[in-house]
Image 1 (cartoon, one colour):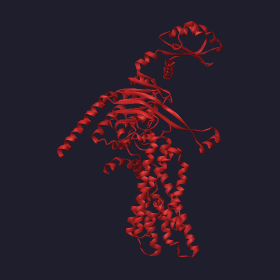
Image 2: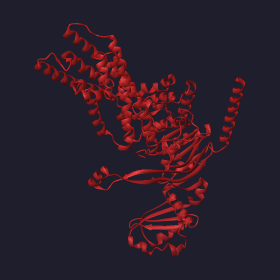
Image 3: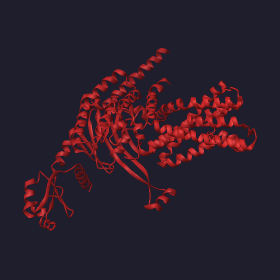
Image 4: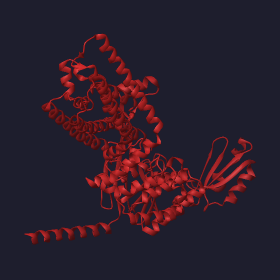
Length: 272
Length: 364
């Protein structure tokens, strides 16, 4: 394990340097996402004001606001560029340059991306979290930060990121067949965004559908961590959620390995 | 019990040692009946064809490498040449573990490249002239630090190694610049250094001099020579530049259309084809060439003399041993007026064509 860290640490370092190279690009992305967040906020604000009800499907307005911002935070933190990165390397044939190095393809990508994410985490995690807690304090008048929920949330978030990463790597390998992933990636992001509860809480959907979606890996990406943060789950549900997350993580790691082995055998390198 | 175990262990060690020496005695690189087929989707022309192939793709199997066998000794520099699309890069990619052969065997240093790739690539260095293994956005030095960790090179050997590579490839001037700002020549030198950081036993260079100017080419050749002679590194090199081959390679393997057409010393090649020259001229009056009759005048076999007329340029390929340049020139100038004239060595494509032709003849 320590050896893995020693070998792949430089990738993280390189990732940080790369992210720093493209700062402006990164700020614009985050800015766009935050704007979308506020649109969501005003939309739900209007729903609650006009409806006159204190709660909607078990969510109070405060819950909803916290949900919007924490699910945004979670989806940003647990987002993985894996499919773009892998797909792009396959498309331009640069994957060959990785194969001539004694490294594992997935780990090299993972550690590089962790480096790139490091800045995101430091830049938006603390301000957003503090902002949400201050909002809760101002509206409800009580300080309700739950440290246990927070720790559970962090664990779940890490698992969510890893699932997302390996899911995306699997998806990226489809570039071996499709050759170009741009359109497919766009579709994937939209579908995953909805299925993972990034748009509306899964609890708002009909019970049958929401149960199915809860079992599918997508819920583990955003919905599970957010519900844990909000403290909406009891202990058995928390254990089941973690079990599901770990199951999906192992599932995608194995799937990724199988696809990789199959693809390498029939690979042709594009572009000479 | 412990004694038994340790004896067993000892035996195993001895066994491994003898195995190693056996392998060392063998040639370093073994390639036997290597074959690679690709599946390619064929598409009818036009938009309609695109749509049709999107829904119902038609596949065609293309054989990039038909059947290639050769071996290489330790410390040898092997030139791997052939026209574009001959399958050179595909062979290199199979030897470096990137592609899995459809059939056949290749073994390098006792290892099979595509099996246990991670372990195998620790012992080789690879440069693809058309790609870079450097981190595009990072300073060059950063790439080397990353590679140092990947290959687990300790600090002391790293320092020594960098000093050596610096001396041979002169990296100091640009080692702190981001890779994207390097010129092609600098990038190639940096790439070669990157492939040598871990002192590999075999170095694969796929067109290392592509697109470089004469001076840089010369520097790179010197560097390759220095590395080969100082460390006894085996080098496999593909190129289109005959000068690379002449300067560096003791032996060449030539392939065309996925098959081997020549394997031997460069001197053999030169004695067979080195005296081939090409004379090209543009006649003032295109009709005047009709009066030229090389067959009657010189009476040479078709492999010693061949000519071609595309309406503008008239070219004669001839064997310099059989007929002097002066004699040929005198004959042409006595029959026709020329606008421009030029005599040159047959280029590599010409030699490959020549060899390919004679192979075909041998088969027939």
